[in-house]
Image (cartoon, rainbow over all chains, first blue to last red; front, side):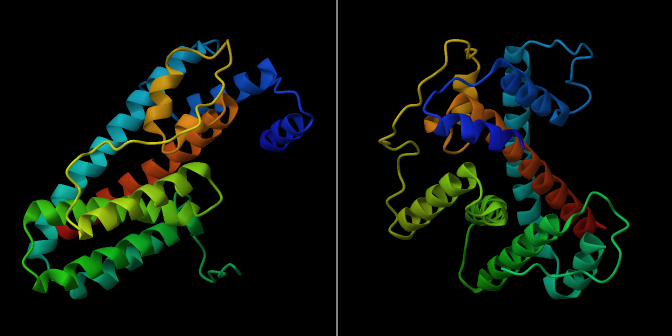
Length: 93
Length: 155
């Protein structure tokens, strides 16, 4: 819904994005961060949320790299076809 | 594109149909990588292939709906083409990018976020926040997916 609002604002030729929209988006971003990083105060400054988001993204990307390495080792030793059905079932259920 | 209706109930609230698409795409890619094991590949090459599959299944699931997924798909295809020609020696290449007009109230950290989110350099601050939220969600799903695969394979 907020995206529709911002789109109509853009089309009206003024790039005036309201402060409330920014605050709303920042709080939405804050909700996504894991509990340990989210500040308890509601009035967390935008730059703190951005910093936490940057750190979180970096951590997630690092985890993707680590898990890729572990998957490489595991794929080499496991017979994919026999485990595939069980895995897909467990993931989709 | 019509959505498939899953007839069985989904007791796990963490897995939506989008996540299932992402899981299937990634697993299919893994199976392809495994089948191509007839060609001798080094483990580090395999790791790169798996990493590539992870990011591409993320990008394909969001498709063209999101700017970051479009930018990521372009970047992955470029990398694939360069790797096929074995020209990928430099990690960072020259990019012609129209920088976004930063708002005066935009915090300094936004620059780092722009670098982390694919395609973030030319986004307006408002869009950057939205795209970052979506990117974080997709990344988290991918990490959960890979973690459960690792757990399943190692048991």
